[in-house]
Length: 205
Length: 205
Image 1: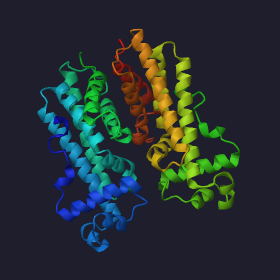
Image 2: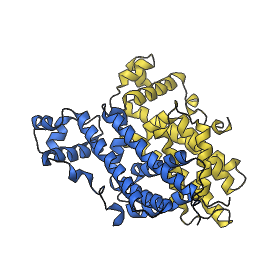
Image 3: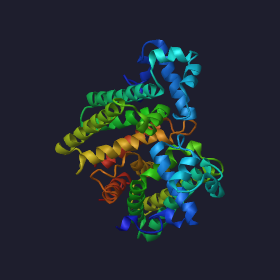
Image 4: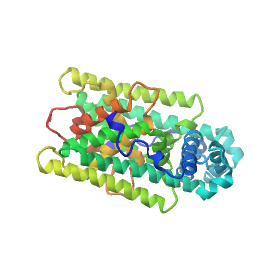
């Protein structure tokens, strides 16, 4: 499947060393199942098959695990957006690729995306500011492509920044309602949303 | 402001008796500030200026408060959708009204909407099943209007149910990113989103 390929396919495999990665995936599982607040560092260590003391070697607190999850997740989303912009032939093509992959990513990684979205208020500093900056960067990249498309007559958009926010919001919210047991695969939803985004952008059909 | 008018303007004022309503608004404040899991029934009683024993007269548990918040919130959203369908002149007009009001509602009531969305997993039964049923009903009403619009040639949509879900998802996610201190009022976002929805629906411009 091409939509899941590229550097953002599974960002967790890039985390080193292996014990740090194991704790991160254990934290994601625990937060997704029990909720962030009800999870203890002991729960996470246990799931990773490690002692609480071994956990503290890598992460000083539960919040620092959340911070790392947020950072890796946002970096993956940003990388995916940059890759789509580099792969596409023109503004509309870039935006279609970007929406397809961004949406498929939020379906595939819905557990991580939910944790990061819902617990933004629990993120410690500077992780919270980093996340906000990464989101603004993604939004600015999308708005820039929209502006270029409007300038060359390919798109008809009056408010590029607001429409960029709406298109990304549509993609992010997939993580909320996506059901892996449902009929629609991440690729199907990605393709449909690329068509809807093209319409929102007033692309000539 | 017309977008906020109608039966859904402030659903909490309808909750009776007054002490029950006071506990509900205190719970919304506490959940929004501290998170659902970190809030105790003692916190809620204190905010409402009542004793924990007085709280239990109205609500047997913290989960039952969440259940009531969910029920009132979903009922308001459903009522708003039904009202828009009754107010509109034709399918496109009904869908535009519906999106305008649904979006403005999710901006105005973003605290309640966030609690209900993020804590769906914490909802006790039968409240969770009721919420799922209310959401399906809203989605079915929107899909029906889309189908009618497509049948009379006003709209061009191949997948009414999926597009209904996408349009509602776009509205729900406003509650996540809406910032009352930001530039955009609920009415401004509602109007922009009605235009975007009309484009997603392939309405003739």
